[in-house]
Length: 427
Picture (cartoon, rainbow, N blue to C red):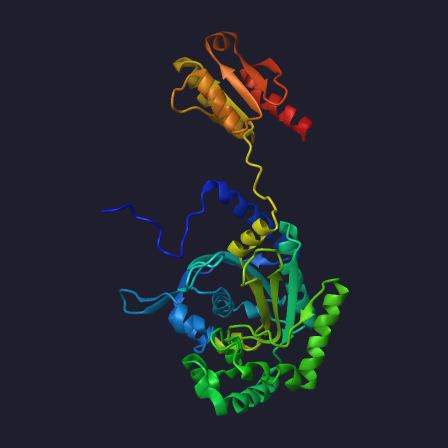
């Protein structure tokens, strides 16, 4: 038997990388707190029907990419391919629409699963951060959600960003556009791929998103949704743009922007990386308004807007822009024991230092002092505390500050206080 490796499309986040993840998660948590979005945690798997109804039967996700299985009770379950449907299911199930303050502002971070061809920044198990604001149809909340997404990227250190906007209109506008698309594509639909042929009647808007037929001449001449927006939809989109202007957020309007999920209407947006070398797929985040989704999942009328971003693609963009994060993992104190009796004391000193908020470590392989000093160097310890026979007798440890090489004797009971003082002077 050969060695067992991680399944295709999955990966391990090793300690040197997980520090970057933790920094991004801290940024997300702090910004969401500033914006007053509260964390929600939903199950990793749900009833398959949730995604069939919530994401849409005609989408690639439902048709081709879901990890679906029968459990022992013969129920069909699916590993979540995205976050919005689960959050809306929870919003309906727990009657959050009954809370006095609307919209309910929620965020989540967690693994999602899609069976697709793995490539840079796009895996079969990936981590998504997403935001949902449910219970308001105010264009100002659209602008706030977009601002929060932009802030996450900027606070992480990214600069080469492009925000692309479009309006998908309300139900009336979309129906008029849908009819125009059917009339446009129907005479030549047999020239398109099987997926597009299936979509023609159900969801012709998805034809515009097709990777196979994107060069077909009818794509370039397809009716634009912008021409079918009714007065109300056009006015809504204008207000969203006005709020973004007020916030100083620059954007590009792209009438061809179509989000890949069935539930979107009105505002749709994507944030792209313009970093050199990022690759062909430049989308970092995507989102939009979904005014009928809560009703589709059994709730009352509760308009919503949200976005989702891949943490892997954010890390890739940081790499392309050469932004270093997750660097500060230094150790405050490394305790060196010279012999077995000293080691007992070292164990209690390490515990005392940690109890006082000082990161501390020691040797657990009975190495000689020289090897322990090398270990302290590799770990970038700020202080080395040496305990031997003479230190045990005097009740004082030798404390060496690695940056200055200064050394002094400090009573065992005062080590934590002494190191805290030195740390605060440095900071």
